[in-house]
Amino acid sequence: MTTDKGWRQDNLSESLSDVARIKIDYSKPPWRRFLAFLGPGALVAVGYMDPGNWATSIAGGSAYGYTLLSMVLISSLMAIYLQALTARLGIATGRDLAQACRDHFSKPAAMALWISAEIAIIATDLAEVIGTAIALNLLFGLPLLIGVILTVADVLLILLLQNKGFRYVEALVITLIATIAVAFLFEMIFSKPELAPLLGGLVPSRQLLDPAVLYVGIGILGATVMPHNLYLHSAIVNTRGYDKSPAGKREAIKFATWDSSLALTFAFFINASILILAAAAFHFAGRTDIAEIQDAYKLLSPILGAGAASVLFAVALLASGQNSTLTGTLTGQIVMEGFVNIRLKPWVRRLVTRLIAIIPTVIVVMIYGEKGTGQLLILSQVILSMQLSFAVVPLMMFSGDKRKMGEFVINRFWKVVGWAITALIIGLNVFLLAQTFLEAEAVAGQSCADVRPFFSRGQRRRRRGSAGSAVDSSYQQRQIHHSTGPPRTPDSLQHELAVKQIEGFTVRGAIFYLRSLVAASVPPSAPSPTSRQTSSAPPRPPPPAAR
Image (cartoon, rainbow, N blue to C red):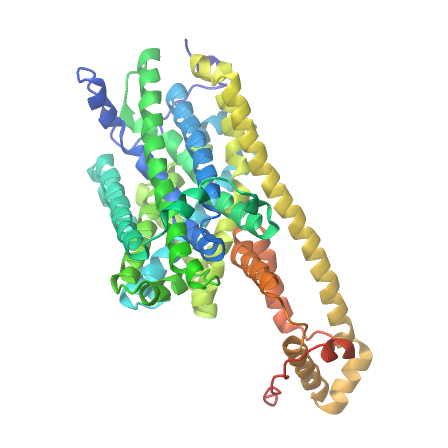
């Protein structure tokens, strides 16, 4: 049965047409043919263990131990299902997801989806650049700015490997994944996690209903499933020269599903290992405040008592950043060719994608330093989370359309499962957006209340008359208010820490980051006398005189 009747136009171009197809020898036994299909799953799995995932797992493990292992498992199962659908779409129709969107939607809608996909790719490349630069800084002491600039060399490596053959790209990716696996195997040996609590963490518990824990869990879900992987997988499955008959496609779908499922299962163990390491090394040692990759690197060796622990951690981070670079640039080529049919030379396309990610990173490193790169890494995960729905919805539409998929359309049960996952993803993003705007509105109201007396006419006269003494007084009152506020309980501190650790991995991160910049530059109103009397802590010394 042909599937072309569901499409408006014939597919005149193949995905990654500059890549030589790997022939399948049908005279070999099935297990040998399956080996020929191994590889694309590894490229897809890379996106599920990128530096952005590291930060969420470190934050969750250090704050709540093994509790959030179940969320890592759930997000991995969702990823396995969605990637199986993309492989089915690519093989059954001969089109990648970008080409299918261009054919199905109107031109304005397709252009909007293209822009969304490009934003997701830039955000992915941003995380890879930052992760690689941090790893080079930790291993060799290179300044972050130099590390960011050096990542341009990745473009030349990808071009060289792809010209030699796609198998070379897959071999490098598998080698880097193996490096990550070996590093975390030794980390597990050094950290000695307890088996019973670890296995218990794989089962969802009532503790997940706690608002702070659930908030971190939502962040793990949002940082795991990557939108660019859906475009990538639907294209690279067609690098295999399988038989185009229904029987040949059916076998190709089966082998491609096995390949991606095995690779993503392996990625689950890597992500789980990061969380387990953070729990065993930090949480049970009383260090529940670890949320930054750099902090984890500095504390691993002292806490675990193994000098190699921190080095292995940084080596794994470097391998993760390099791996993600390979897949991110390939996805950029697939999306541009699929949505708008623009065919640039591979090195031009990769260089443009990398420069778009490097320019903001260089600016942030120059202005804000190490802390700025951490915030930028967080912002990249915010963007990826928000772009995911724009890739999942078209995928479900095409996979359940019999006119497009023919005999390979998914059945009713899997449609229900897929749309439930889609609804969950959309619901989480809508919920987080709503919460963000509500909190932003409250913050804006409070900021206006603080700014209004500062910029009133009377205040301006007083400041002019007292040569700045009013400003200094306001600043002193602000310092006293911060130091003499009501004491916070350990529970409230832990909740505040959890929110601080994970808020950046949702859409709230960008709002909170901008809010903190505004709050730092606007002197708030003076505290009430009551708030000062309720404190038992001594006030901080006054700030130095204004320059």
